[in-house]
Length: 219
Image (tube, rainbow, N blue to C red; front, top):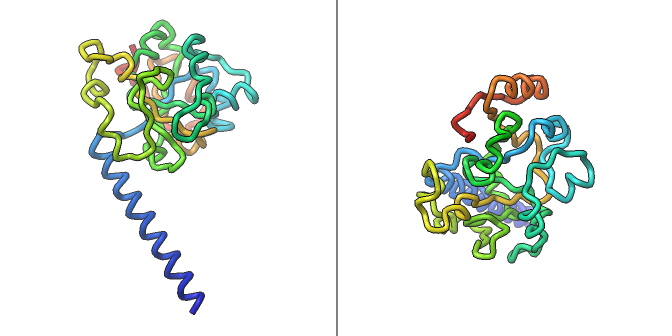
């Protein structure tokens, strides 16, 4: 009798989990989310392929990285998120769109950057967060329920540029925050801006991950 009851509970949990995943996928489709995006320097690709994407805190403990982050913004990311009370540096930051103010400010480095296109189902992780803007801004709100995706300004996120939107610079940097690390198998594709970066990336990946030339994702 006990074994039957335990089986019933396990089946109920599995059914609930499958339903939630299905509903989550439907929301991702509704908002046109194909990938999440992480922008990094080509020099960091070998260590990322070896160890996965690490949070700022872990990466700077374990790796010698080429850091393209803004020092002033990074100083504000020592704050804790309001939901799980983790420091922002304990998350791997990803974006809903790669063409944003962060990449615009590094446009002179475009041929040295790669855009990692990540598995969108990372959004389904229960311990992940997303924001309606740059996580380091005090006006930004944090969420961990996919139903709150309607709080993001999708017109701003999907537009070619953000200047026509009130608070567009902040909103365009809406983030998905993954705690600690993202496994290499969640890197679905790597986008580059030019042929020289393409060759370097292909040498690093050994064709284990698709590398594509997509200058339209860069400035």
